[in-house]
Length: 76
Image 1 (cartoon, rainbow, N blue to C red):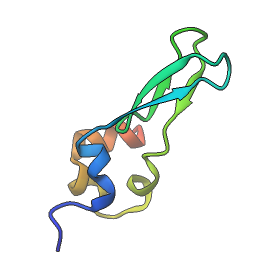
Image 2 (image 1 turned 45 degrees about the vertical axis):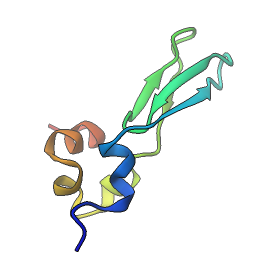
Image 3 (image 1 turned 180 degrees about the vertical axis):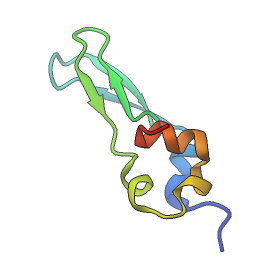
Image 4 (image 1 turned 45 degrees about the horizontal axis):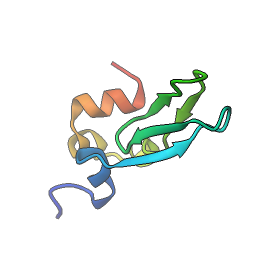
């Protein structure tokens, strides 16, 4: 068995992508482990789709760690 799921690699070791704000067109930096980022110009919230496997996988807590798990699913 793997130490970690290959799908969680971008959560454990974040990568950066630049997206355009759909509201104002400003470039917004989004790290792969960010659940959401707010545009600095207009305040529009851009959501990242990283939480997909974390929400349904029964191994998510041990895969990404307790702290990251709670951060991504929004529960403490």
